[in-house]
Length: 489
Image (cartoon, rainbow, N blue to C red; front, side, top):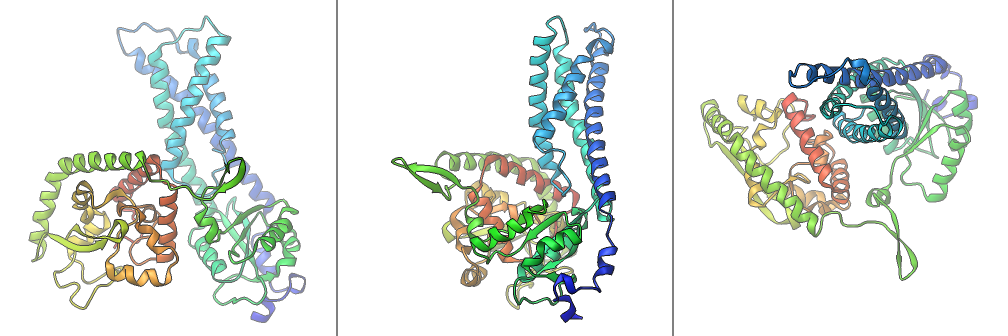
């Protein structure tokens, strides 16, 4: 069987059943189109409802005299038209892959604000006699953001659930049957709502095929044939070890067939997260990396740390006192757990946590917390699920040992191990450790891949912005409140 799976596509017969199982390209394209049309209609309805609700709110004010709603129809009409055009230009209708609702919310605020400004400008020029209440515009703007967000969340959930059931999904071909190819297949298989239906794998030379779970359809030269034969929509290339010429050749083979192409990045691409063109006395140079956190940005980040951690400690101090009492009642031992961690420039510091395990939890030595870990207390299981054990680290943030957002600090014993075999691991210590981080909000916490976690941490360091910090903090809060933290045990 394995030998037949390694044959060229032209020799494969058993895979006919695999292909016939998902041969519905026309239906899939039609379903995708209907999802887009439905989203456009929902956006238009959201704008009209927002202004109508704003009108009803204003009309209830006895101090404001306002005519019937039909007198103000140009406002929602122009706003809705402009909003749809701007959304199309910013690819807001190409949302087939699961995306953060928080990311979309920020985009909605920005793009709708532009739409409202353009609406006012157009109406002022085209209809100089058109009068409207400023409060109608302001309330309408706010309600539009609210309704757009709600409608789009509902639409996204419906679409992703449909894609998870094979309705409107994309047929994808994975190029690379090695370790990276297997990792990509695992990610796709474990996230069915992404809307990918794997038709098979293309191998490069002699590569392992164990545990792929999908047929190896052929080699690199067979890609055009495979794309046509299996109605492939997207090609994901997982060959980070390939040189430039090989990668260009593979992309060229895919481009002939007009499919979507995605490439798993190599180490250089991870480092060069943003490449720009500069000059040196008129001689062109490529700026591979600019340090994101330096100068006034460090001051800004530290200022946010002080304000947020100080305010947070004041606001939640009664809750922290209540939690401390519960810990003492739940099990014998101290309230706080103090542990040495490595922070900025690999300097050790004492991290504070609410104790969530028995006092003798590490009598046999340090170890990762696992699911159903018997060392946890009853209250500790709940605290770890909702990140409540991390709250005392606001004191570390206020004292300057940590930041609100950054790479999560590790114990010295683990740092010494990881630095031996993980490339650029110590680069994580170029910035302060964080109460939360980019890796953590993406499910890489606890007993997960240190390699992957390091990549996320380095991406954060080299792409830092205040908006990114706010986004990570909000995602952490939402995940904690909802108890949806992945690998939180």
